[in-house]
Image (tube, rainbow, N blue to C red):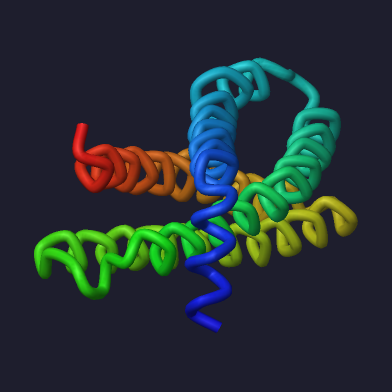
Amino acid sequence: MRDFFIEIFGDFSRIIVFLHIISSALLIGSMFVMRFVIQPVEEDVPDEKIKYSSCINMMRRYILFLVPVMIVIVATSVFMHIGLGFKSGNPTTYVMVHTKEALWTFIAFNFIYMYFKYLRAKKGLAEENYIEVEENVILMVKYLIPLNLLLAIISVYFGVILRGY
């Protein structure tokens, strides 16, 4: 199995790295847009039902966007980790690779938690319980997305270090 990953990475290394970087840029850019562009606009909507229903719809679309992006990041990470042979290289580099993996694992679990919060907010919207909707939306947009954004930026920095630039 290891030889398969090494051979595929050897044949398609530029495409794999390109997909990894593009997916990371899309993820970081989307988190930035959600927190600093869309969320302030949503706050200005006076009608609660319209505000929260559009916010729930936006979160649904965002989650549908996140799933393939995260799958590409994970798949390309596996190819790069095995294909570049970090295990047999410098121990410091190997630790940094595992740190990046831990950061992305935390980000993934945070997104899964956000999905459950989205489901609770959607349920609250259906029941017209706007307090529950607001609590869940605020948690997602003001705390979880910025946390993921910060961790993703740190992970990108580690990626730059790993590539030797």
